[in-house]
Image (cartoon, rainbow, N blue to C red; front, top):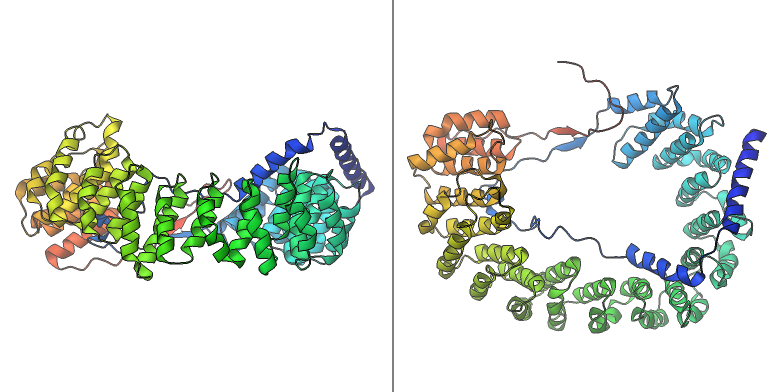
Length: 616
């Protein structure tokens, strides 16, 4: 490395170290709650689906008839890699940087065949005259490409670029198990002049490779109340990996701390037990699992459920009363791992949990208990009080349980739920009613549909009516399943175009196709063919509605619609739901088999630099 470059790197690191030492210090106690919050958020339950999407509720519009359309295959234009590799030799540094960044991003997306850029990326990374940010981009992409054979060269590049380079390279070297770096990490760990960020990376890396020589230094950091909290916690985690056996005696005093920074000390105690095993460890973690600090409890429960799920299940009543979602999540998972009638009763109230991911998981576990462990009667017993309760969250989940388990006595309550205020409970009740298909529900459900339609149909500019779209699609499918022809005048009101309620209209058209199976009623045929052909208006008809129109025309034996069906089968192609539905209808009318759709390649777009497409 040229002397000038080394001197610049040293001056930059010295300036950063001076700034770190002279910057106003935040009180250690002020750091603790912020750090514990970060720990808790990092382990938070995965975000649940959008509660208003209802994509997880099946619909007969997708399965009757079944349209076996293969999904498009995600692919990359092979010429992209060639273009980007050429850009790595461009005269502009920013263009080289953007090319390097794009290659790394494309590999993260799964693009193969980018190894041809490795030599150029390495040249950029090692070029002392190159702009630092361009070198960093090249280094990061080389790490993304998993170039383990270049470990030594990357380590040198990182040293030349200081902390920014180290942040990228150290974690990769640790993942690769690159032995020569261990001595450097140990020196960084024990050198009091090392930057805090560099020491943190060294701690994490030494823990990753389980370097036993770091044991004493890591214990010293954990015990140093003046050290940064993130460094102490990282050291506690590293110790758990390096020397899991015999660490309990060291961790126990931290787990017993109270007052002051006691919450953080207990969190470190739990972190040090992350890989410990045995009866004694179970008792140790059980005490921390009910800690008042959520981050402490979460760290303890994450390990305790792995080594002794029974202990967590015994704690479930207390954990489920905790305000912290993580504690309730661990309790739900533990109880769900041990099917029994008692645990069915434990999970019942969890259907009302405020966190969507937890209440959905409780419902899924109860259904597993019912369908795989002969506990159906008990599951229904615990879900019925929730269904008859007043919490919309539990009503939504209990309705779905009744639908899956085909518990027809719940039908009357499900009809009542249609008039409740929340859209989530309405949709789940309508779906369950469709699954149960009880004749006695038809009249009250029809009365409901008529009431709703009076302020739904013809109000395209009123967003309020959109809420009823997913409810009515299941209601109308129910009418079709049970051949409830009294509803046809109402259903015909849903034929005219209204893109805001396309699913409800599709349900109505699907039902009428069943009412008129083999009966091409001229007025209905003309209306449905008009909807199928509405492709040039602004805006055009919903493809979902067009798809179901084609299905119903096929069911009705609408031979007069064959020209339109053939036209849109060719126009939309059998790789689309509408085009395939047209082909299915042609097959019903003529016996001609639907052309088999072949998977299509869908090239990813939007990269900053792409090859020019030649004109055909």
